[in-house]
Image 1 (cartoon, rainbow, N blue to C red):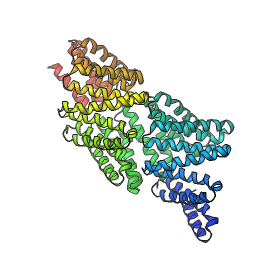
Image 2: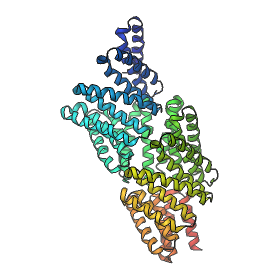
Image 3: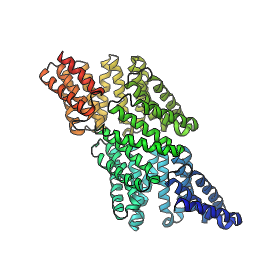
Image 4: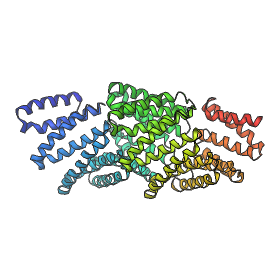
Length: 580
């Protein structure tokens, strides 16, 4: 139903309710639900909230008087309300209507499975999403899996009716599995969702192309999660192409989704080392979300802040570290205003923006200025974790890691040990409870703690930590995952610092060969690895290997990253030192 028709329907039924409430209240509730959906589809998510609330209130009163007739409609309105609350960032408030909708529909499905199992599965899907949004990622798995099981059974009887719903449930299951660290298991439902939606979109593009784009985005994220960063590019590109066509035909409905797909594409391009190509989608996502936020700040300012954060990272990736500061600062300013108005919804995002700002400040040499946002991010996430450990302890560990790096950056290496140790302790507890989800993060904290010990000159403590981090990543993510490759490089550097070139050189050589194979010869990590291996050859006195490798690394870095990029300048410095 169009927005205009929905508004007219609400106006008409309001007038009729004034004359005959008993007859027309159910119709008014239905028209309010339709209006809420129409407004949300047009991108007016905040305006969609009032009719959603009113529909719930009306149907609750009707269900109290006649449960048999109106409980199903109450559950539908509760589902709708949960979605609307989530869309404006009120994720905790969204949980209660999602739970209540499941409870109602479970009772209805027990009495009449044929009529109500599909609605129960839809509510379970929504509940999984709501639980994930507040950080209860493992709790979110159960309702999501149950929804998939229900829809699988339903398509046996009626495939045409329930294939779209199965695809939706499979997409959600892939996301939920990734969130708990089961990244390989997440690939199967992500692939199956794309296959189903592709078939549906071929038969009816108008109805199913938007959902196909969503599943392609999810598949791209899942592939990147298992380190298949090149394979992740194709679905990311296709999602952008689909959403661009949709947004050209209906900007109000599809521009927000195009911005989301562009953000994902920018991240994927960065992961394969196409850092310059990543700038265009990052800039375009900011431009779209800025226009949307000017028209409806309440609905789109949070997304604008997210795109600004991404743009900041992309600019830093091409060495434009000063230019990266402006979007990082703006993201913090937006999220600070949002958090002042609604701390529950936006304090976590403010902490994320502060962490990003601290990193960007460090990159331009403002290492003391970087301490303030790093400390503030830790303070915010500590308070959040005290109130809700399950949701926020992982993020607290990340902020402690960043604070440790910032402290080490200003030479306070002893002070940096405390947050580095605390991050390891938190992630060790998390990994003991859920290894699949948290062992990679524990390895990251072990790497960070090792780097602080290395900066303090204590290689006897640093080396075992580097070795443990690499072993954990190889076990959980596999030998070719980008995180594993980075860890292997870190260990090689530590062996070199310890003067153990007999161990460092084979690791450097293996790291470079693996990076060239997995990420390609032009990826920034590959360029840095080439520089590291040249440095190791030089330290070993093998100048005939070191010089051509330095020269190749410098030429490639200038070609790919530009002369001003920090990696280029580091290689240039090493080569000049070599020539002297």
